[in-house]
Length: 220
Ligand code: CO
Image 1 (spheres, helix red, strand yellow):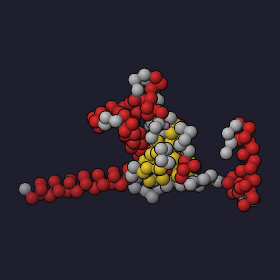
Image 2 (tube, rainbow, N blue to C red; image 1 turned 90 degrees about the vertical axis):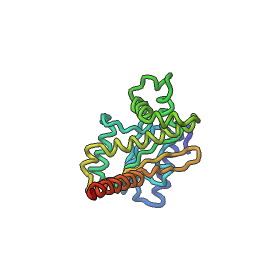
Image 3 (cartoon, rainbow, N blue to C red; image 1 turned 180 degrees about the vertical axis):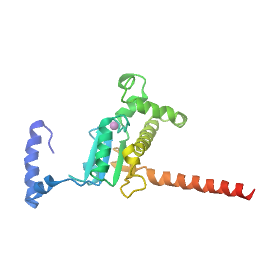
Image 4 (tube, protein in one colour; image 1 turned 120 degrees about the vertical axis):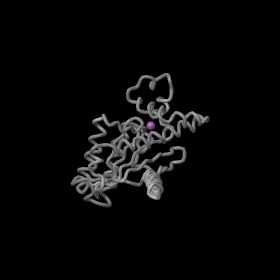
């Protein structure tokens, strides 16, 4: 591990030697093309580096990171990343990954300091407002922060699903699986919010309820 600026370059030399020792073509192969199956949208936090806790390595993950893993539809940066990832790279999975203890989420919940008038964090303040009843029912402050981290991830996956480039792939084989994760740095664990299965269950439940109502009307 490097700890000083100069050590970064010393580490880099050792890393190159290590990689080429077991595979002399390692960098040649790496330079040809990328075929990542995953798009990772995470927080810029220095402790949320997907390469370190997923076992995925160079070439496996296309990455976009910003403060509090926000997918704002008017953000050209994230929109371009998603578009390129699904239309050119044809990634199979889009992962929105938040993390407990997120400074951006904390700042958005506070009335003073950096979050007070931040245009970037406004979207999180809006999420809080939308889920205010649930949020205010949680008395423990840490649990309330944790829940907002989760709600933010869920809302951002909805924003991913709503993007035109994603919508246009609906009902095609290229439509990616969209996941919501929380990286719990207190334990190192990835928590999968299982957004797809939950949504599916809700859709199925609503569909069967709809059919029940229709059949009652038909009987009358
Ligand atoms: Co964060």
